[in-house]
Structure formats: structure tokens, C-alpha cells
Amino acid sequence: MTMRALIVAPAWVGDAIMIQPLLMRLKKMSMEIDVLSPAWAAPLFARMPEVGQIHVSPFRHGELALYRRFSLARRLRGYTHAYILPYSFKSALIPFFAGIPYRHGFTGEARYGLINVRHVLDKSALPRAVDRFAQLANEPGTPLERPVPFPRLVSTLEQQRATLRELGLEEDGEAPIIFCPGAEYGSAKRWPVEHFASLALALGKEGARIWLVGSDKDKILADAILALLPERARAGFRNLCGATMLLQAIDVIAFSRLVICNDSGLMHVAAALNRPLVALFGSSSPDFTPPLSEKAEIARLNLECSPCFKRECPLGHLDCLYKLTPELALAASNRLIS
Image 1 (cartoon, one colour):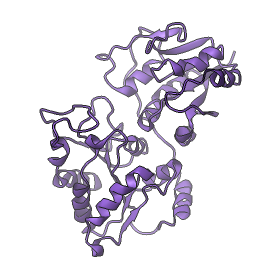
Image 2 (cartoon, rainbow, N blue to C red; image 1 turned 90 degrees about the horizontal axis):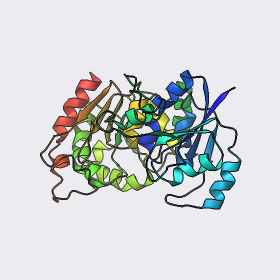
Image 3 (cartoon, rainbow, N blue to C red; image 1 turned 180 degrees about the horizontal axis):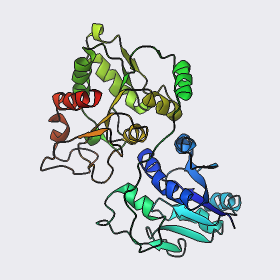
Image 4 (cartoon, helix red, strand yellow; image 1 turned 120 degrees about the horizontal axis):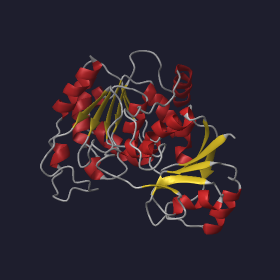
């Protein structure tokens, strides 16, 4: 009998990328793998060779919509296994309604019965998010096989060139340096725009092309960075925040020679594309969600007050980011470029 797995994907870009080692292990078990994903994350799974069909989840965050979940579940019958990556009660409903025999996941939010291959989370044994996802390929209670492989997204040179043409970007010359100034979680994860501007001036002395990449919410940050630069220094800059879809952002980042990024979804994209990466950590910790790449350098200060994991600095000073100077990021950048 063919084993067919339905993956109920998480709702964050970084988490969506970090489930790929689980998919790799399921593929080695000769499973056919499909994914139930939010629409915005579908491009990520389209660039994972393990994934077959992508089913788009139409539900908004927090929406129960029991009848519509039941209707979708009727169209998803026939799978032998389901792997439910989010911890929420709602995320386990569709596999249950679909009658999928083996429903794997951590016990989570009152999910007894909905999940029948239940793992109990031991945070000390599984300190990283990627370890926790990969554990679900095991039988409950068995130790995780290590090392856990790094996620890897596919972006071919042909795909990159097509995307550059769509965006009106130059292919010729030295590959660009990418700045990703945003972080969806909050201001305590965003390196100051003044620091990005100072780093841009230092890197731009060598005539580097610098492209700013992010969502439409990040455009105000990118505009603020550019506003801090003298007009003569802006020639090699392109503000692409809000101008790219996720699939295009993947290809633009894949085309780069260096990425400077906050702890964000695009940090995990850059790591999964194996690009040289300086990852800037303030209120969060690389112990839980590090960039999974041998080409990544982590820039952090390890202050007494961090990591606090807050959206905004509870002390009001943001020392973990302001004292993380452009000089420190420049030194890391130079090590990677050289």
C-alpha cells in the first residue's frame, strides 16, 4: 500500500522552511507528500523537491469555520498519515474530519483524540524548532536521529534571471548585497534604520549594489534607510520592499552574494538558499530558531536583558540592537565576502 502523507503546515515563513528536514525523512520512508498550507506560504513548498501537491488553506488566523473545514476535509480523504505541525486545536480538525488513520503531532492545545500518534514535547531534548518538527518522523518516545539536515530551497539560475527581468533588475555586474530590514514579530527584532544606513555607506564604498527586500509593511523602513543616505550614495540601491511576491523574493535572494537580515522569515529563506548571511539578533535567540546554514554568521550581544522575546523593548532602550553596531556587522560581512 502506498503511504501518502498530508502535512498541515505552520503559519510563519521561518517555521514553514524548518519543516523541510521532516519532509526529507518522510521521503526516505517512501511516502508521497502533499501539503495543506496558507496561500502565502505555497511558493515555499513549490521550491521543496519533496512536495507533490499543495492544497491551499482558506482560513484566516483564529477562524474556526467548522462547516468549511469539514467540507475541505471531504476533499482530502485518502491519505494514510497526517503530520500536524501547529500546536492549535483547529489545525488538527481537518485530518480528523478526513478520517486519516495516523495523525501525528505534539499533544498541544487539548488535542486528545484528534491526534492519535501523540508526541510529548521535551524542550531540553529538542531545543530547536527544526528538531521538534523532525522528531515527528519518529515513533513517539524514540530519540531524534542527528544531525538534522539543513533545509534547502531550489532556485535555478534560469528562475533567477526570469525574476530579475520581471522586476527590471540588472543581471550584469557584481551580484547584489541584500538588506532585509523588517521583522514581522515587532520592533525588538528590527535593527535600527540608522545602523542599516551606516552599514550601507561602508559597503557602498566598494561600489556594491544594495537591494532592500521585504514586504509592503517593510517599505517604510527601507524608505527611512534611503533617506539617511546622501543622494550621491543611492545610485546602487533598489528598494524592492512591497514590490516582490514571495517567489520573486526567493529568487532575488538566491542571486545575491551577501544577505544582512534580522531574525525573520527572510533570514530562514536566505539560509535555506545557502547564501552568505549576517543574522542580527536582538530580543530573540538563535538557540531556538538559528539560521540553518554553514554560511551564516550570527551577530548578537548577549546582554543581561536579552533575549527577552518581547515584541517591544520592556526597558525602553533597545540596547540589544542599538549597541549591536554597524562596525560589528561590517566585520561579519567582510569575513563572509572574503
